[in-house]
Length: 558
Ligand SMILES: [Zn+2]
Image (cartoon, rainbow, N blue to C red; front, top):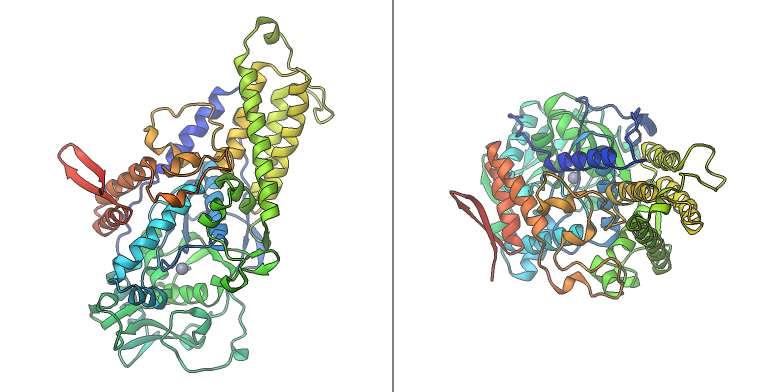
C-alpha cells in the first residue's frame, strides 16, 4: 500500500474540547483520572478482550457502510447508531478516533437499480447517498472522518489485485479474477466456517454474498454484455469492476493502514464478506489486517425478520411519519446492547418516547432550579436524603452515577447498563428536587451528567448543553450530539407531532460546514480523490462549492 493520507480527526477534537469544558467548569462533574480498561467482544477470538490500540491513544475503525441502491431501513440504522455510540465512547475516553465508513456504490444491486431508473450509475447512487446522510443526520450520528466511495477508488483496487496476483493468490477466467482460497490456509478463522460442509458449487458472478460460492470469490469482474457503460472501468485488469469484498479491503487499508484496530458490521457481514476481506488483505500484505472484529446482532420487528411482504419493514421516514421523534427512535436502538437481538415494536417506541421525555423534563426542572438564585436557597447545604447516598454530598452522587455509566460502557459497550445508571440517578435526583434539597450548583452538576451521558455519549438528549462551545465554530456543534441541528428540516425531538424530515431533503448548515472542513483536510493531505468525493457528496445533496481566494463558499442549488 502507498503512503496513507492523513485524516484530521477534527470531530474528535471538538468532543474532547467540550468534555474538558464540561469537566472543568461544572462542579460535581469533575473528571476523574479514568483508568480505562475497555473490553470488547472480538468475533475473531469469540471472547471479551481488553482493547489495546495499535497506536497508543488512537483508534482507527472501519465500519462497513451501506450499499446505496435504496433507503436504509431501521435494521441498518441500528448498526450505524451502535457504531456512532462506540465512537462517542472512544472519544469520551479521550481516544483520538478515526472512523472510516465506505459507501458501496457499485455492485449488482446498484447496477440493477440504475438500469431500472434509466440513470447513469453515479446519478442513481447520489440520490441514495443523500437520503443516507439525511437519516444519519436526523438520528444525530456524528459524521465519520470520511465516507469513501468504491467508484472513487478503482486504481487502489486494481493495485491490490495486482499485489495478490504477484503473491500467487489469484487466477483469471474470462476476464474475471478470482481469489483461490486454497492459497490462504487461515481462511475461515473469523467465521469458523466448516468449508468441508459447504457445498462446492459453480462460481457465480454475483455480488449478493448469500449467493456467492464460498470456495473462491471474485476480486475483479469482467464487464458483461448488457451492463451499463457507467458501471465498468478500463484498467490494467481489463474492462470491468471490483468485487464487493475487494472494495472494503482497498479502502480500509488506504485510510487506516495495513493493520488497524477495529472493523465492524452486522453479523451477516461475518461470512463471507469479512472473511474474504481478511483473505485479500492479509494475502496481499502478509500482516494482520484487523485486531478487533465487532458485529451487531439483527433487529427484529414484532419478533420477526423484517420484510416488505410482511408489512413490518420500516425506514426512518416511516417512523417519523407516525409521529415518533428521532430521539425516541435512537433511544430504542441503543437501549439493547449490540450483541443482543433487538425486538423493535411500536410499543417499545412509545416507551422510549416517555423515557426521553423523563430525561428532558428533569433537565428542564434542573434548569429552572439553576435559574432561581434566591439567597436563602443558596444556603441549602448539599445534603441528600436518599438511601443511595452513602456519604458526602451531591457531587459524590454525580460522580458515582458517572462511574457506573462508564463501567457499563467500558464493559463491551453495555448501553443498557449505562441507561440503567442514568435512570437511577434521574430517580434519586427527582426525589431530592421535589424535597427542595438541591442547590443551584447541584442542579448544574446534575445537568452536566445528563448532558455527558445522555447527550454526548448516548446521543439521546439533544438539548442539555450546559456549556457553550468555546473556540469552535457553532456550525459544527452537532458533532457533539445535538440531534436537532443535524438536518435543517429535522423534526423537533420534543414534539412528536411534528412532521417528518422527509418532507424536505435539505441538509443543515452544520453538516455542510463539517464536510467542507473534511474536504479541506483531505486537500491538505493531497488526497484529491477524497476531496473530490466530498465535493460530489455535497453536490449530491444540492450543495455547490466554490473555491475562492477567501476560502470555500457554498450555496444551495436552486
Ligand atoms: Zn465492507
